Image (cartoon, rainbow, N blue to C red; front, side):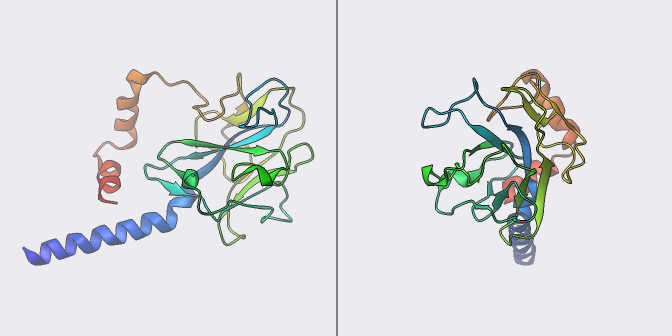
Amino acid sequence: MKQLKLFLTVVGLVLCFTAGAQSQDAMRLNEYLVVNNDDFQDDFGQQNAWIELFNSSYGTVDIAGCFLSDDPANLKKYAIPGGDLQTKIKPRQHVLFWADNQPYRGTFHVSFDLANAKENIFTKGDGKTIIDRIPVRHDLGENVAFGRVEDGIGSVDGSGEGWTVLDRTSPSTNNSLIDKAAKPDRMKEIDPYGWILALTAMS
């Protein structure tokens, strides 16, 4: 009995460490808005371009130490600061970064704008490993967002698969409206045997 308990404890610890090491890979660039004239306002009451990230996993992900950039030649353009509890993104939740070139305004204000950006790029803390990237389109109208058809699903290499011009902006919320009654059925499709929920509970 003791050996079984020890084995389960070791397995649980391994799963925890593995989940922690790979968790940042679950983050996805999810939506962006280049020209914001009459859309969502930041905490200073200003309207600027924004970039949304989405945690596609069923565990909390700490993105502190990762990088955001608009330039593939400089992946370390904006380092997401540590020490801010809001950089710990809960399962299946969104986080918004303001591309206003005013990083002194706080953690979620990056050091570039999207007016002349080539790409949106999200990189691991090593400053080299790109987790997700998408070219920035400059042919969109005012207050028109570009995003994933469904949160977190689609291309992570810039090919654009799974992305579209959205009918409406949806900062910090789902890109596609899903009927609440359908969520249990959707979860059953994703995790028919309950392994994801079990592993999440263990970790």
